[in-house]
Image 1 (cartoon, rainbow, N blue to C red):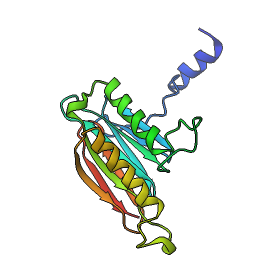
Image 2 (image 1 turned 90 degrees about the vertical axis):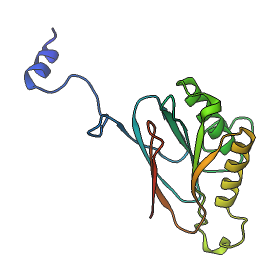
Image 3 (image 1 turned 135 degrees about the vertical axis):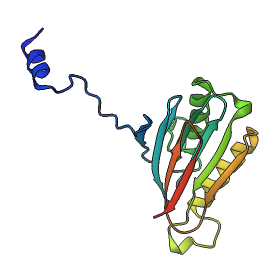
Amino acid sequence: MSHLAELIAASGISGRDDRTTRLPDGAKLVYLHAGNLYASAEPAQITTVLGSCVAICLYDPMAQVGGMNHYMLPADVGMNCKTPRYANFAIAALMERVLALGAEHRRLQAKLFGGACVLSSFQGSGNDLGSKNIEVARRRLEEEKIPVLAEDLGGNHGRRLVFRTDTGLALTKIV
């Protein structure tokens, strides 16, 4: 054992760099930043804050696999933009991840959140970024024949969203 390892062992501090925070039931706590996605076959509670961005939560109740994306823009601007900041990539990547974790396409369920019009000059026009983000999500899920079981979309206020990957439970709060 190295001298450093001996010191760490004697201190009572774990030698692992495990900064994962867990809930009392063992679920992993995850904060999802804009332009990212997260999927898990283990229990996780994903939290994010949405304005004009949209989050799609996908869940397979039989496999208890779920995930969420948080995309910012409805369409990419070229071939080198394969990032979850854009709806088309974020939706495809989320579906790929949950399927790779054991979900089955025929059992997938979706919940949609966000898409607020946060700029007062665009409110009521239907031509704001939030409305465009919502439109892309609805169209793509319809194409994939994935039912939308719940949604909290539009308006002019942001939302805080909490989603459980193992139960499909989603909660929102206006911020």
